[in-house]
Length: 455
Image 1 (tube, rainbow, N blue to C red):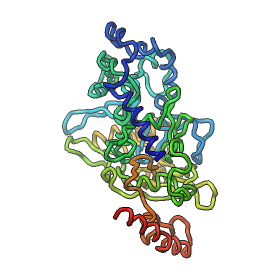
Image 2 (image 1 turned 30 degrees about the vertical axis):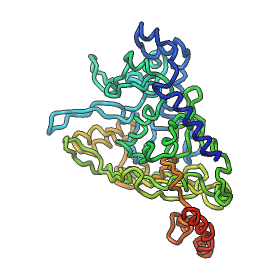
Image 3 (image 1 turned 90 degrees about the vertical axis):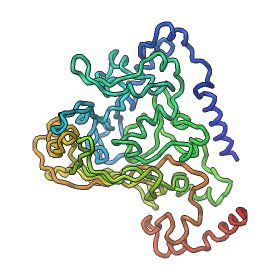
Image 4 (image 1 turned 180 degrees about the vertical axis):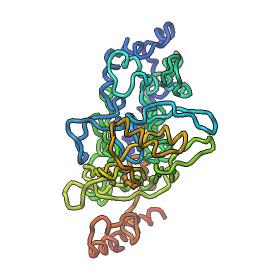
């Protein structure tokens, strides 16, 4: 009952700030009279907020990282500069650009990993100063009437690639707390397309929090524009703030004490996020031509919320090698819990001489399918002169933290039956322990009682 009451309270709070129900935002008369002139208009009431944003991960795409093996403590890491096979490039080699003309159609198009950066591209990822502050797209996050058709790249009169923004008066008059759409317009499309990277839909049909009317920022509560994140092994950059289920639900979230005892070894997500989805594999060594005659890497993709996760012990440290990025931990280290993950495998080119993963500039293969031209372009950008590309696979574990369900959460029977959700052998249990854990004696009484309730 405590959980339901909390969710209801959050839902009501969300409704109270929903478009149409919120109090009128201060400054409306000024905006109606003078229009919206970018961050300078916002700063009339919120001084210093533009400069504040420039120090966040949403602007920098990088930060110090303390929980990943093999990283330099003196450097910052994130999508600005890291290379892995979900995105075989980064902001450095795949900055927003116009790709070469496709020889079959005579047409080009824009591409770039940082199309979701909340700037205009002229003041790019990590930039600072007055021009960068003025380039911030405040409304893409804060307006419920933002016209996303305006947020497309184009070439200005100087031939510079610019990211468009909706700076209309109508959008400025609809400002408030970010709604789920403001967040998801970028986050559900990360990795190259809708539901690709983590395969979740934050909708009323697929997530209990969304069904209660909650939005992303109800859990990811910003502090000075810095947003807390979880510990997905593939989300390295962070603002130094963290969020966990226990922040709202406490250490004993269930009325059933048998379930509460499980929280010592099971993460909440393990039972309450029994499905995942999205892209399962990509082959960056073989690009396929689409109907528009442009090329994309070969991709195997499942529907959102359609596949089972893989379970592993995780102590919130990340194993990071050229061929594996995923959870560190074991049942015996005293700090790990069992978490659910989406396993993704990507094929790309590694340097045979160093063993390291090579990056790829997507522009050449997107236009012509020439993948080695993409590797050569990226190597040139990164100053790599002596390398020998050889194909190889990398396995990635993506954390599952959304698609939360209460009604369809895993139960005693689903985990402890033979062939159940958890593979106890893979999780490090002996044959004798597995036999005990999958014996009906473990769950029969509780399951029979549950059946009586349902009858």
